[in-house]
Structure formats: C-alpha cells, structure tokens
Image 1 (tube, rainbow, N blue to C red):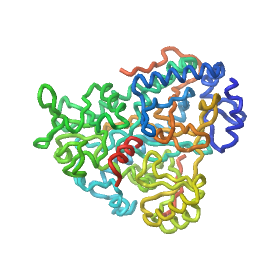
Image 2: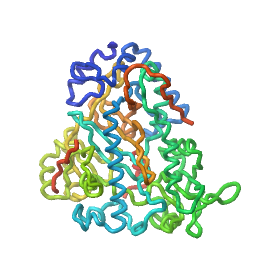
Image 3: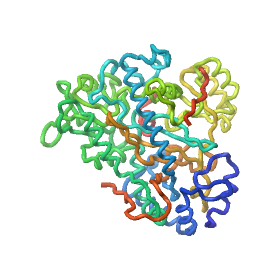
Length: 519
C-alpha cells in the first residue's frame, strides 16, 4: 500500500465509523481491491497533479458552486465511493419503494386524506407543515405524477447498515455533479476505472426526458418540455443549463412564459410556442405570484391555474414540500406499510418527535448528546450537533424548541461511514453520505446507479454540504462479477427489514434560493 495510507489506520481508530474501503486490519474490501491496487502505485505528486487537472477541468466547464460568496470548482476527490452489486440492489429497491410511498402519500393528502382518517398520521402534522399548499388541493396533476424526480439521502451507520436520512421531492439538485464526476474520474483514475464493470450514469437525461414527456397532459402527441430556472444568479444554474442541454429542451425563465386560456406559452423569435411540461427548478413560493408571493419575479402568473385545469404538467408538482418535512419523514416507514403493505427495505434513522411532550422532555435533558434539526431545514442549515455545540448554543436551542416544538426533530449522532480522502498530503478517513436520484414516469421508478456521494473535507466533521465546505466523490456501482478486467467497459458521455424505533410520539429571497440549491 502507498505511503499515502501510512497513518490511515491510526486516524480511522479515532472514530467508530464503518469504513467503506477497509475492513478491520486495513485490508481492502473486495469491491475496493482494484481501487486499492491503483492508489497503491501513486505518489503524492501523482495525486496532486490529477486533482489539479480535475479542478481545472471543472472550472473550465463551469462546474462550480458558491462558497462564502466565492465561485469555486466543486471539490472532487480522487478516491471513488464503490458500492457492490448486491448492496446496490437493496438500495435500489429501497429507494424505489420509498418514492412510491411518498407519491401515494402526496396524492392522498391533497385529496381524501385517508391516511388521516385511518389514524396513521395526525391531521395537524399535514396542515401545520410550512410547505402544505391548500392552493393545489383537490385536483390531480396532469400526467398523474407528483414526484417525477427525487433525491433520497442515505447514510451508513457504525454497523454498516444503510439508513435514510431525509427525503427530497421538491427540487432535488446535484445530479449534474454525478454526470460531471464520472466524466472526470474516467480520466482521473483510469487504472481502476478500466479494470471494473461499473454501471454507467449517462442514461439519466434520457430517462428524465422520457418521464417528463410521458406525464404530459392528455391529448398531446409531441409534448414540448422546458426547464424553468430562476436565472444565472442561482447557485445551481450550471445544473439547469446542463440538463436542458443534455435533454435538448429550452431553458427558460419566468419572463419567457405567458399563461392564456389555462395554457402556457413561451416567447420565441418565431412567436409563441405552447409548453406542455415544465421542469421547475424554483421553489413553489416563487412559482406563481397570483397564488403565492405577489412580489416574485421568478415565476409566471397563472401557472397554478393552468396546472389545475390540466393544461400543463409541472414537475415536481406544487405542494410536494410537505413530504420533505422532517416530521413527516419520521412517519414514512408507517406510510410504506399503509400504502404498499410492505416492510421498509431501508430503515430510517431513529427520530424523536419533539411535538410530543414525553419525547421533548427526554431530548431537552440530553441536548448535548443528540443532533437537533429544524423540520424544514436543508443543506445543514439550522442543524445543531449537541456534542460540538457550546453551552450558549444549546441554551438558545432549548428556547427555540420550547417555543416551537413542531419545528424540530432530534436524532442520535450517527458516525457516518468514511472513505479515504486526500487531505494534507495523505489519505485520511472522511465522512460521506449518498443521494441516489430516482425518476418516476408513473409506471416505473428508475434509480440512477450510484448518485451523489458528498464528503466532509474536515476531519471529524459530519457536515457534507458544499455550502459548508464539503466536497464529492464519484460513486461507482459495480455490476455482476465486478472483479478483474472486462471488455467494453461503459464509458461515460456527457452528450433489514427493520421497524424504526421512534418515540410514539419565512426567510428572505437569498436565504430561500440558497436553501433550494442545498435541497
């Protein structure tokens, strides 16, 4: 093994985390053997040169993000995150199962609310959610799908068990990094990439476009699809342009659209053209000034009425945010059992519902031992990790929880799994999570093989979000017999059944846009 791993076992011993690459004794796990062999031949100069090359490529291609007001290339580490075929099979089925349950839940809560009348969840849970929009109650979206695109955040605990950390079915972002990471890593670590059968990711744009077209309003033979962006100042603008380009559809802003007669049209140099499907990349509150924020210049007046009348499909559907509520998250295992009559394939993280008195009292006595999260937060915003917080921060948190218990949940501190990451001239263990992306066309839920692995670049940090200094890794899902060389390796092209133990139990414009990006 390279000298770059000289102190790795010592650093790994400072955490209880499950290491993705090494078993105890620093023996490479089977799925990582090719990666370990390739890395073992590299020097610090080799790794540095390749990292610099990938960063320059990202900067040239505009693969950047905003950090503290500065535009930076998105950090991509040279060590991939590798997932064995059998492990991915379980994750794939679990993510698809979760998406089907959330789809059924959203259809229900905006219609009959049978889940409430049957006593599975309390009515106040739904109606008190900040993202439950009565403006879209009582009608089925054109195409019959609400969750077209989803990002289900998954982590691995100390025992190696995958658990769902949160759901993202409003405006999930990050898939552009998946596509660009693969493109870069095929050149960054070709010694390992060419020696394994790795499932490709470039199929995503085609799958997405197919699903969007399939869910167009009835009677439309050749639907026109557009991507609706807030504009160039949005931190995820690169992703908007990339996806529009790869799908071969127009990228539009709200000012490019006009609603008339419950139809939506976009202004073009050849005149107005009807739009049938809008892949929106802005939050609901900014979508239609007639229904939500009257001061919004990002959307288009009349979009909600056009959707209500069946004249346009909006993906993802307006009102999906209620399913992203972290208090609703704690009920998802019950929703899976209720709607699908199945046991959850991927368990939740154990969660305390702080609106329940018993759970709240228990958590307030242990604030310094738990992670406390706002139910509508994203990107790590507002999250407090008890063991790392000061007494002043914990006292402030205590007051916030007491004032608004519905707005918070608490969870144990999970030692997220680690993957070797280049830091300070050597490889060190860093915590990672995983966001698999799923595309739902109404008949099938397709899960992108891999997803976005985000990595905390600071030692010991559990915050992986790019807005707080995190980076990413290419995620390699091995296919079938993944060991040893194979011919025709796909090359990327940019053209426990376990019951979760749970206690029975407005921002300004810039903040909202940053929150949307991190979701």
